[in-house]
Amino acid sequence: MKVVHKQDESIADLVVQGKEAEAKEEWGDAGKIYHRILKRDSNNLHAFRRLMIIYRKQKMFSEELAVINKALEAFSRLYTPRAAHSKKVQTLSAKINRAFGMVDRKGNSIYEPGPVAVWKKRRALVEKKLKAG
Image (cartoon, rainbow, N blue to C red; front, top):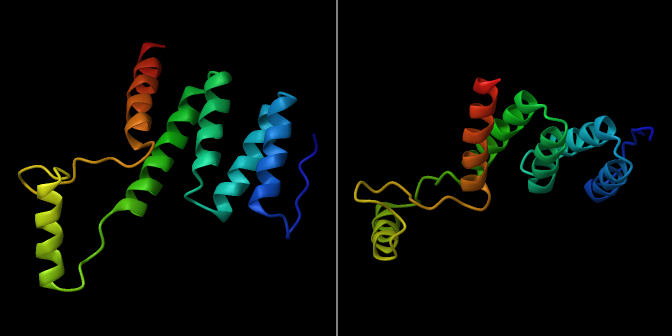
């Protein structure tokens, strides 16, 4: 499949193209398409997942590890708490978080959003594979 570069392509169109390329097992083209999606939307969960799968199928563990690290960085930025508007809001938020068990004794969040925990486990496995061989 020839990757066509259009300026007005939506992310949805690119996702369809990526799925088509994967169905034809054109892994290189599919990877390029998903990288284009990430250039437009650096937090696109679908593109990160598909890239990881593509590299895993091809046993390209160093590339998969790079994508995992990039995804973890993007999602940690996305979910990093922002500064509270006032001291009162900050105090109330801390009390609510403690009451619902969302933070440890030091006030650090114990919740990992969405796929972050899965990606961390996968990163450990990929690093282990890279060290083994």
